[in-house]
Length: 391
Ligand code: HCI
Image (cartoon, rainbow, N blue to C red; front, side, top):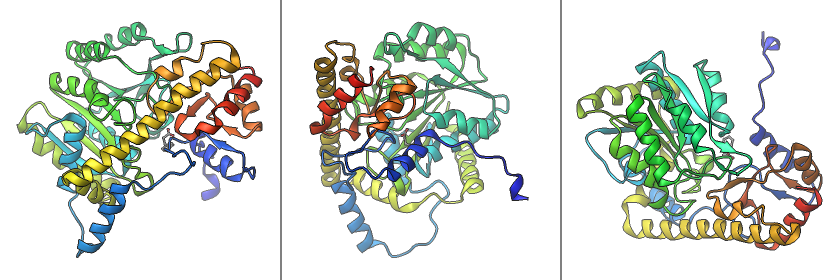
């Protein structure tokens, strides 16, 4: 029976992790999967996480089940972090990572409206399309990135969004667009919000990189503006990057309802969806996050370390744009310094990406590079390799 299995489609990003691990060269550079690395090339456990884990280890007296919607302090903490508030119109459920939160919100949507159609940016994180295809729900892309200007093609984007209706659910990247690094301005967030209000479509914000762009508050401005105007919207948050909890799997599916009266049914549905997909989300990483968010000292230390990470990424962006300017005698890579988040697309062809991989530099095939995978001492080498490949 199993021999009849169709060959599963490999995720290009996860395949790259494997290819990198198998490369024996010491000089290899991993710019593939979106994982933060420090200037020594390590992905550290954050200081506040270590301390919260120490406290949990000492205080935890049971491993019994929790609630299907997870740790209430975690859910409230994530609502405050993302939306700057808790309210009687907000509900939510802990989920295994941002991917789990997305999946739960997809399921919730399909139960609320079996005619729902999903829209994701062109391009987007490949798992958006892949998960929707796996669920066999209607989905298509809206225009987003302009490969010529290397910015957002806002006219094309808004023209599509203005043509949508109440059956449509639009996945927006809250900040730090993956894979392009090109983000909406505040004025554009306001215009997108107007489109949702005028046409009745529902926003689903994928908010996986809060704090990695310009700051925890700054990165949330667009999402918070939208939440202040929208009757209903959904947000999928992740603690993978900003808390460095990748493998532990903590995320939150947040739902803003039209009224407090809608909340009990949405919460019960989130519980039911969680139970049918995986029962209880993993407690440990959410308990760690709840401890950090509610303890002033831990929170301050977490925010300080997150600021160090963000400053390092933005410093690398400036340094890389400068190195590429020198090596190519042109300013066509200056966009790298203006983009925000872990990723930018270098603008290399698949052949140039392959040539750079021959030289030990691993990027995704669309030339998405994880800026945080670079180190200051490797900027010049990277710029030389890009120039030599003809990028
Ligand atoms: C990314 O690199 O885009 C985010 C990390 C990731 C990649 C592929 C599957 C799950 C998570």
